[in-house]
Length: 183
Image 1 (tube, one colour):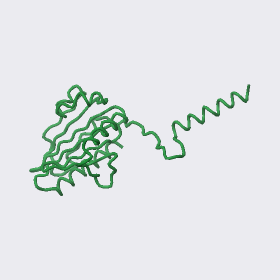
Image 2 (cartoon, rainbow, N blue to C red; image 1 turned 90 degrees about the vertical axis):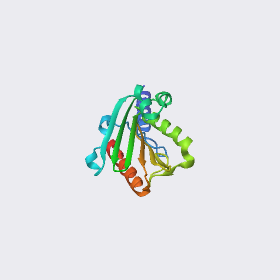
Image 3 (cartoon, rainbow, N blue to C red; image 1 turned 45 degrees about the vertical axis):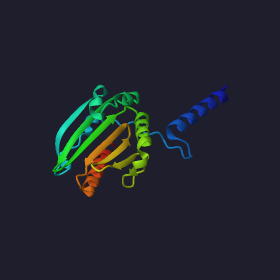
Image 4 (cartoon, rainbow, N blue to C red; image 1 turned 30 degrees about the vertical axis):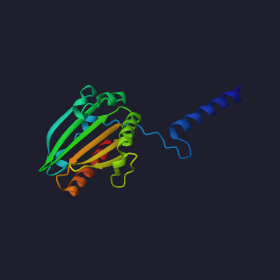
């Protein structure tokens, strides 16, 4: 009887360690969902000299169609819970920053993966980042960054207005700020 109980305790300990710590192979440990609220992801314009806020809204996902032009059904089906949208201006440049809270990392990854799959032909990595978490598309008018950071899906559009270098630098700065806010 004692050997049976000791065996059960040992098996339970192994399963617990395996589930929470991962194994020794290439399986990555499970990332914990961030406790950073979406309300704290609003960019502080003091951190970005020359930029000023012209618009901000934040709401539960039943208003999400205002931010993403009719993609509400798909986003809600993927688990979108809240969003915030901030518009910043710097002279002739405008940046529209959309953050969607999917409540779970898996839902945010699914949405990001769906969007990446449909846009991968035009996608490039942002800096040293992998396309698995962040990518960039460029048009004649916008430098757009799409990212998944923990439970958040982020889309940033920075107007180019003839200055690719400025748009590229601004998009990278905004992305890096979001990464630091979520961690």
